[in-house]
Length: 115
Image (tube, rainbow, N blue to C red; front, side, top):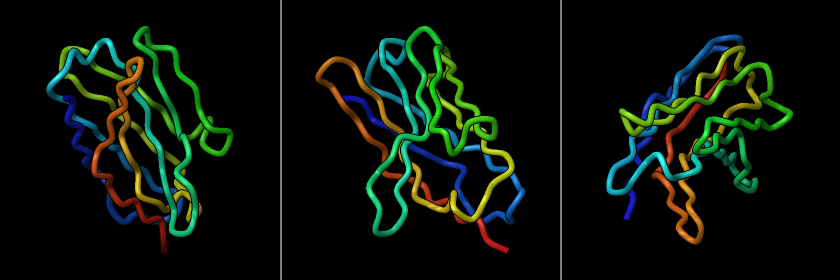
């Protein structure tokens, strides 16, 4: 079993930045594809960004150029650096770890972008 714990959410003004962290334990972190998803009220959970074991990244069109995902296989963590935040980025952000049929989620962290 892999446990994922997110941190770093909060309230930020439009144009501001936040850095989300996800700490993983209970598995061999380097083997997992890691991702960040988000879910706004009334919406489905959507992929924000993911990073492969080898470090290849993909981004949703809505965040490309503003968000950066990275991983540290020594610290068993994945980071989402979010810049130029917009009100439409407001959501609960979830960390995700996938390896074959294993699929794990964190509890989520709230990000609110508002003036």
